[in-house]
Length: 264
Image (cartoon, rainbow, N blue to C red; front, side):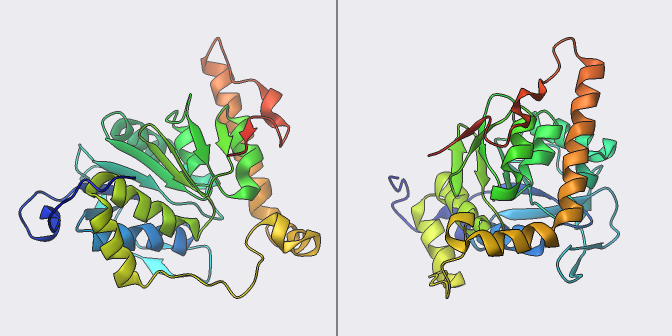
C-alpha cells in the first residue's frame, strides 16, 4: 500500500475535520472486538461514537466489562464515515433486534465504509449490507455467514471495495490499523501502532484451528455450545424472514460449512 501522506496528518494537528465513526454497542459484545479497533481509530484522531438504542451501560460477554454508550440510535450523526460492528457471544441479539437492524440499514445506506470484525459481519448481513461482498469473520462463524449468502474469506483482514472485515477478536487490531491506513494514510496507522506498542510475539502457536489442534478445538466447541446454537438459530430466523418477504429467498444450499468459503 502506498502512503498518500507526505506531512504529519492534518487530522492529528487540528487542521481537518475528523472522520466520524459509529460503533454499534450491544449487550454481550466481546470487549476486545470493540476496544482494539476503537483504540486504533481514536489514536488516529477519529471521532468515535459508541451507539446503542439507549444510554444504559452494556456488559460484555467476557467477564462482565461494562461500557457506556456515548449516543443513541436517534442522536447519532446521520452521516458516518465508518460504520463498525464488533462481534460477541450474544451477537444473535442485535441480529434479531428490529431497532438495531433498522439503524444499521439506515446509516449503512450513506456510510463511506461498512465494517465489522469477528462474528459482527453476521449482524451486517442480517441488515442486508453484505450482499455481493467477500467478508472475513471468526473461523467458528464462517459456516453461519455463508448460510446468509455471503462469500466468506479466510483472510485475517479482508477488503472488498468499501467493506472492511476482520477475523476473530485479536484480528480487530490489524483490522483497525488497516482501516486507518486506508482512510488517513500509513503514517497515521504507524503512529497508532507505535503508541499501542503493537509488536506481537504470541507465546503459543494456537491461534487457528489448524495450529491449535483437535483437542483444543473440541474444548472451544464445548465451551461455546450455547452461543453457537443461539447464532445458528438466529441465522435460521433471518432466512425465514427473508423467505417470507421475498420472492427470491436466500437458499440454504450454503448451509454446508464449506460452501461459500474462499481461501485467500
